[in-house]
Amino acid sequence: MTKVPPTRTTYPDPIRSEDPPVAPGSSEMTVALPAADLDGDRLSTLDQVWGLVRHWSRQALDGAQQKTSHPKSVYAAKPPSFAEYRAYVRSRAWLPEGYERGWLVWVPLTYYVTVGAAGVLLGLGTAWLFSRVLHFNIAVLVTTAIATLWLVFD
Image (tube, rainbow, N blue to C red; front, side, top):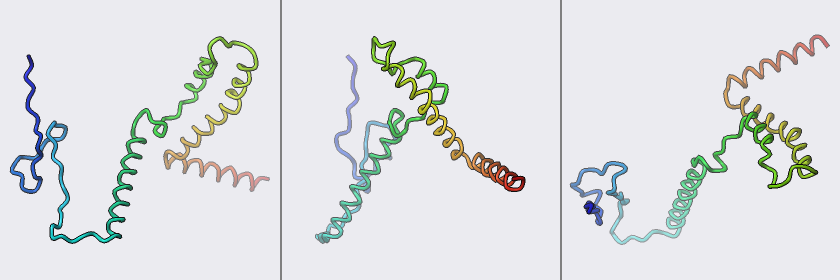
């Protein structure tokens, strides 16, 4: 029989505690409580509303950070490379089982090789252009040089 170490059920007072700080990731948890004024003064309605707004905004920010930082999240998805896109189109994973001919194949396939491919290339090109300042500066210099040559020799 394996002996389970006892868990701490009471939390020490973070201000008056003589216990050493708890290491991150351990099973013991210390909750730092905010300082409180115990004189009996009540918060005004405006202070209560402001506290509620801060609390809700902090919750919303934490939720948004969790959603966007999760690797499987829709918001954190890395776009496929063009090779991955072409492999997906060739695999015909977008077809229902049993369909190999007819309009159900050719209508989406026409989209994938025309509009879809152009959109993926445009999106990847835009991401490449704006991901680094050097890429953007080179694109501006090349565009300026071409426009100047065109205007001079036209």
